[in-house]
Length: 144
Image (tube, rainbow, N blue to C red; front, side):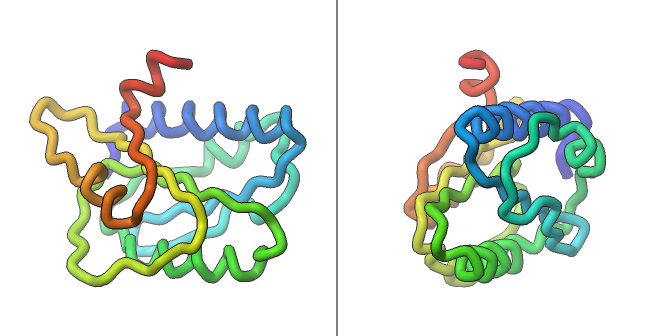
């Protein structure tokens, strides 16, 4: 489960991405996963000028069904295959994944929300398994 501080950082990153997409007049989809469910919050619509309402409704939670989330992402991508897509996943990496991961067939970046003193580096390993780009939240916070 993301701590309150990490959830706040995650929402800040999401707001930053939303602002960038809004300025570029791009489309945005937001799919959350946690508390044993996957939810489509915002579905392939123009990025809004303000994303506060949607961000305020996002709650942290454990029990992340990560494989289910990836399968939902793949299904969502197929529904919108005419669009250029990039997946960004924000996670602390506290999950067990023993299964084979689905190929999302699109660029993917994982943002590591882990800020504990002892790093497990699970997100870095996950990015490698998915063939994606790895970013750390601490780097993003100092860049923004």
